[in-house]
Picture 1 (cartoon, rainbow, N blue to C red):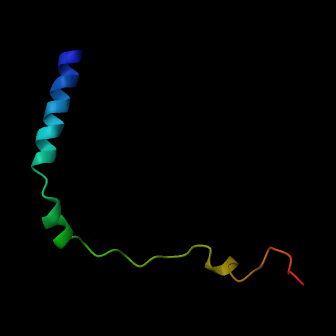
Picture 2: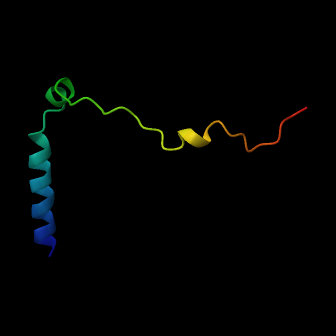
Length: 51
């Protein structure tokens, strides 16, 4: 069992070494626009007004 876990750890390290973060950050996809699902309730004020 320990041998299998060690093999998985070594395989994971090898895979992470192949990842090039800088090229991903240069070519990353654009994020979709943020949708506020609570926008219809934002105008309501639940707190009592201060005098």
